Length: 236
Image (tube, rainbow, N blue to C red; front, side, top):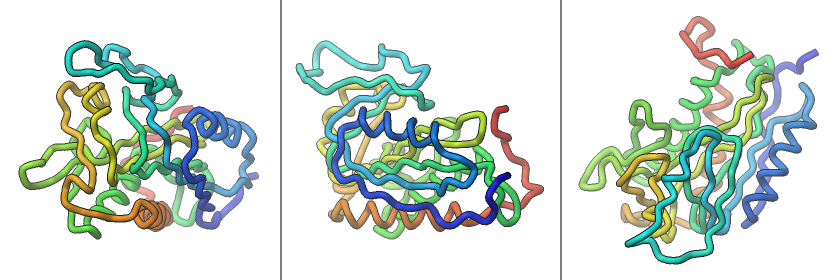
């Protein structure tokens, strides 16, 4: 029997942690959860790492002129999407959610879930006087105006299992060494410009942005869209 009207997700602050143990912990949590298991948001900052989505083309890991020798590890994951980079100065929040849990007004669908995550990022950027926007067919959030319009500032990659349970999540660039983004085709797009909040003139403590994004996600995930709104059903 499924639980009804679940409480807000629990927030777990993991500090700075290597990617692979956190990835393993996400899968273990999802394997073990039951319909009564509370949803959780995991906030983490990773040391430098490149991660690959399920169908990622390793050709997007660049080499040759302009790419210095480096020891950044490359980890194959089971999320959607292509290659991305995580590193210090970036907010990463993993969403361990059960989208099929009964909620007031209905259940959450995959497309709605993505839209809510993206809107949470847009809201946080707006709080710092930065305009963010979606680009059709390219998950994530991009700078909406000015000379850096179209530069990517937040990335999104999820795993949605057939039972509606999710993991992986969203990253927002706050104050990073952006060089490693130039050593890949971010999210599979050659020449895609990547920025952070500092590049856009915003100096903000990482902890403040972590908290702001976690709270924005909780606010948006607590609101269920109208039951008759066209949605994309989960697989299975």
